[in-house]
Structures are given as C-alpha cells and as structure tokens.
Image (cartoon, rainbow, N blue to C red; front, side, top):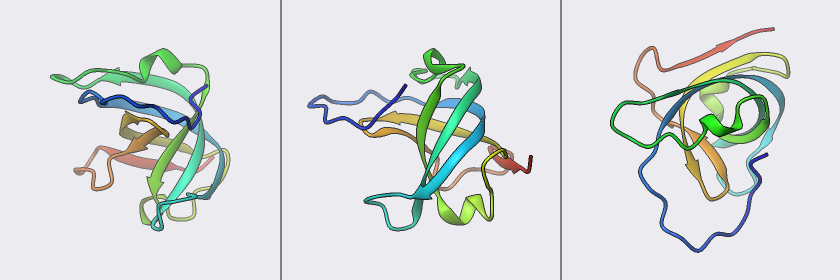
Length: 107
C-alpha cells in the first residue's frame, strides 16, 4: 500500500495509466484544490518513454491526489481512470489531462 512518507530522494520522471475503484474520498490535507482518493488499483499500463512506478500496486489500495473539479461528484464505488505519477506522498493524477486521459464512471 502506498502511504505518505517523508523521503529524502530525487524522484525520477514517471507516469502510468491507472484504472481503479474509488474506495474513499476526502479533501487533500495540503493541496487546496485537490482531494485524496483511496483507489483500489485494478489496472496499470506503462506510458511510453517514462518509468512506470505504479504497476507494482495492482490489486492494492493506493492514495491518489486528484484535482477536485475533475472528480465532480464521484463517490465510493465509481471507477477512476487517469495517468498518474508516483510522488513521495503516494501518487498524483495529471492535474490538466489531455482529452481521453481522464474519466470517472459512476458505480
């Protein structure tokens, strides 16, 4: 499980296409316009040209920061699909995704 932790290291450029079921959602503790989503990761696909640091978490819950306005009224049970990068606090969906790279489907 990806949890927030303090890591004194330089993160490598990474991005993974992820799909999962929203388990819970709450305001992000430090990013004003973001929510923290607990996501049960069902699928992960590498993005060409960058490291894939999230595929190892398939069939586990991960914490993912997502811009609140992208989520709309998504609730637990909804499916989330985005491209996300691994960060020291967990993972973060692209804040300004290109068309077709972000979707929320109700349960």
